[in-house]
Length: 566
Image (tube, rainbow, N blue to C red; front, side, top):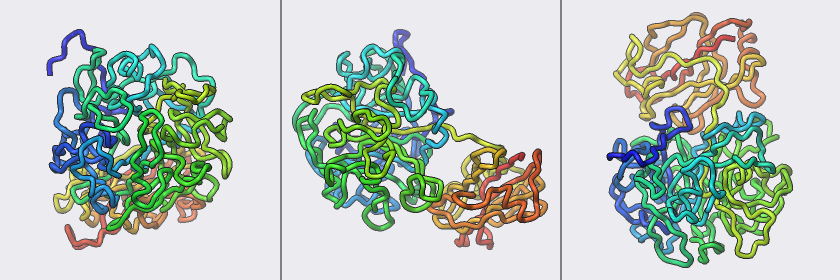
């Protein structure tokens, strides 16, 4: 579309390569997109589906673009059994029910467990590390300095586009947890627009194909615009065969929304769950509980009294939720709670501050306590009602959340089975850019990454994109084979003595080593006769089992490679 000079064109900034970032999201049941035919596969959209912009390959993850878009595509249907969907029993019965009509099919929060939270501990958060959405009642702090923002796109300026937009923190947060003392300059900036068209405020930025505006309205009935309810930015673990890794989500509760003056749908209770639970899909059946409300400091006033409303999760690839002090690398979780939750107004366990619906929370500082505030609403340019009388006064509600910080990297990748090597993948089974050769599950190949530091040795190797439970061998080589050699269904680019550092099984296609009490790479290498002195370079790949005879007669494949100088 032609953009007039008077418009403020807002680049889609934040993460590196953000303009190509895959985006998945859900919408609430009141919005006008609900029941519209999805662009792909053409089925009516429900509030229990995970959606993506209709800007890429049919029914595949895509990115936001500027300009008018068709309705979103359904990426992961809420009502279909896993791996094709989330397996939420009540959602299928709500297909075709128009927006605003109560039917228990609302997905409240979303994460794929790959949010990179870890390195923010003690080092703070940079600009555009936190992505979030708000509902139609939010105002934002007046006159924020980085328009477009919640204030400029919000209700008090008359624009009312903010409920379908995504914002990020516009000021670095130098320490976390971040409670009292947010500076006056703290704020937020619009990063993704609902419809991708010019706002009344004059701003235009990449959109999702949703409807705007969304004026605040009290009482039942459909709304004329949409409200984002769940959000994830980044690679989505889904192929044409369904999900390839866990999806983590929550469902809404049944207590009253004091701003809208109506009860929420009670999707959680309708399916035998609680709205403070984090759930995950189970192949062929209904979802399972991943984290219980009590582990998060919720439902202290009784079952179902709190509703987890936004979610960011860094999962450790070990089944189940492991908070700190369990003997393994912990799962890191951030969340918010919905307006009307009983925990709102209680002192948090970190600062003793009153909890608000715009705060980003984490697990309690002590067992049996309330959640701890991780980032207070004021740091995000959101209004809180902290310290104000509750009668008729509500803070801005944080409706969806994604946290994207960069884990400290060590070394660099090499040896991709994407056609960039002189030695091709043996059956033309090229993988995705930067990945190893493709496998029988069609994941696009396994990718090996490394995080941590070499001094002291805290390096952790992670291979993702394998088959769900593949036996995986972490190999270390001494020599580079620049052209690569055929290795099973893949390509290997290292030689010399190959040492088997760790042998483990993948969980949902992901495996990491070392974790927990496992010996470090330098310790394990020394035990195998290879002492890694400073300046030593070693090469790493993961050999993983692929029992399907889809390529060569070999029953294994290889990840991409990683090279580290110790």
